[in-house]
Length: 347
Image (cartoon, rainbow, N blue to C red; front, side):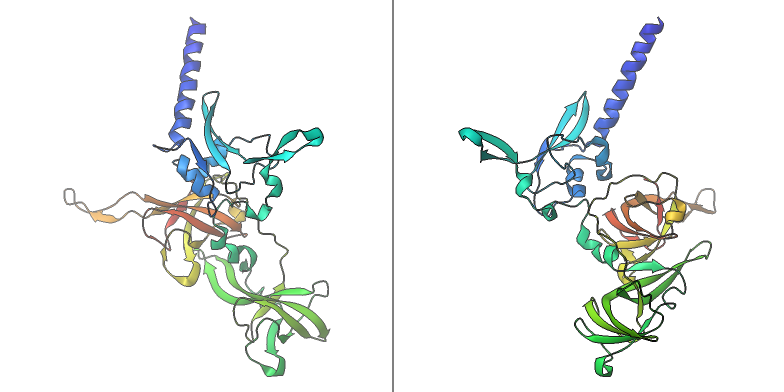
């Protein structure tokens, strides 16, 4: 009797997990999809899955492909079932290559593809400026470094290729500095704790020489006009990684959107937002979180008084850069207009 019960339980468990995996799949999903230029992993996963960020759960690594994390236009994404479970696989286009003795062999086309042609996990063009330029700094950190005095011949506005001068304490071990313009100082909307200061990346300079506290600089690159008073910090040695593996945070996190790129208040798909939680709270790059609109307060016309309606899920974001107390995130889904002060929680 016990064996029968165990068998029934096991069969029920297998049935449950099969149903759970199938529930991941979008109604009317295709069996295969050919990758096109401009696609992202998020786009492709959304073709097959109800929740695109869950793609690592059903992704099946193809051992025949040298680097399965590099997916290229022309690759064929197929939905297959292994042991009854849905899995996504990638098939690389193959070509015929002459072999020794007049024979032929198959060779993956990845060998003639440039790695920069691989599709990204999310639209990198939306976040590039935040990956490689702007950052969050501690209060007083910008003021502790050198600042721009002027350009050559007392020019007030400086651009790439110009000579410039700065004053302050230079660190001899750094020959390259980034130029920052001080932005908003962010406070936690609940605790009022000072979380950090937004430092907008303006450009980069190379140190030519230092005479006492005056540095002579060559302006290498500018994203905006460089002005006297802009601050210098040693350039960060950061590489832009296009591989973001989505995951839920390891701990429960309650956060809020406290700012949006450009200083506007309305938030939509592919907007970059800043949230009031960071590494201190356990947030990691790739963490996906749901965005909620605060429920409206309505009048109860039967019992009287006011009643707060439940919060409503309205979007999804992915964290792509973390700091100690804050993070940058990209809105990947927005079912309705979002705004500063909207809540952010585990998905």
